[in-house]
Image (cartoon, rainbow, N blue to C red):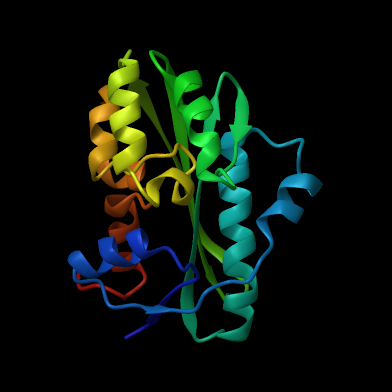
Length: 196
């Protein structure tokens, strides 16, 4: 059976694969995303997600040519602007106020490589509509959200308290979490990682 490697330290992505009973190992890529974002600032937020996914998978795939290596990334776009994770939770109130009552896009990029070469790539966009929440709710949310304020680009964990921020979503649950599972499972079947 082909070895499947996740080139990411994301606990959410690892949990999704584990819960779906997909066998994998983790070898975290040490690619510096900030350098890529600076060098490829010409890319749209959607294309940046795929660029980062490919960049993460590349070195791990070259070091492990016997395996299928998955790079994954997600970018957030608000009003055409690529937003990064917040370096400090103190910046979260301003980010959330800016998002209030408006939609934003989460772009997922997946790149599956073998021997340093792309086997398959996938891009998927979800649109998240943030409700016009009250200042009272914002105060409560900021007090309760904890690590979600700096661990995700939107300052929320969709699978937790962050769900209360939204009025509706257009997209697949797994894609919103950063790993579109169903198209990935299909290619893993095609590549012999999973039973057909």
